[in-house]
Length: 248
Image 1 (cartoon, rainbow, N blue to C red):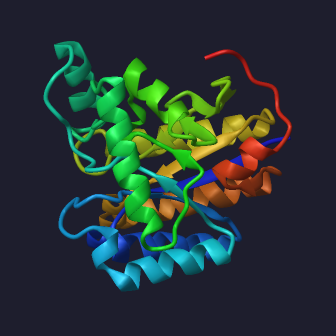
Image 2 (cartoon, rainbow, N blue to C red):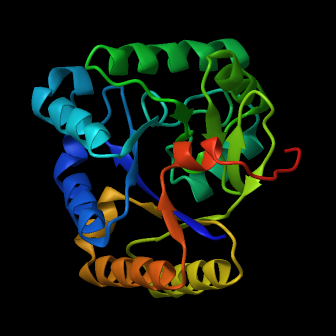
């Protein structure tokens, strides 16, 4: 049985308008959102200093959406192997905060983010590293921090086992020559996975909203996946459902 998870990334006070617009669209389609919240001071204030956004997020949880912790500062940090930073620069456009962290530093940032969210009444069960990229030490830290799951490009990893629930993350690349190609691949990949009864993951970003064509293509893809019989779920609902996985 196919399922559909739609995640809205980079949720923060600075991006609240675009994120709300995505959630409004998902509401009209009857799809819950997995909201990936950046808890630290990214592009301005933290969530603690924006009562309006914090209240909106609490209401979204009451409506059936899910809060997922998404890094701490959402920016690259020095240290680690050069190749890891090179991968982060290409794949995550410089926001791969956890790609080269050792276990202790990753754990410190995880606790900072969780404490920040707790101060506004939000308790995330899952963690998604920016760019879906995490060092081995960071992955160990996520398990130590008590999260129920984490995610990667390849799928969802329930914890503490870390076994993979396979489902590729599909997202846009707004701007540049690759935009149309990426949009076509997203639509094709989502429909193909749903037709085969596999899980579908669509990752939406605030910057996508600046491209009306991407918004239209995304909503059309979601509607097509639902028409193929996929059940809309949050990440937490997928983890809670009985499923087969394989060792990561």
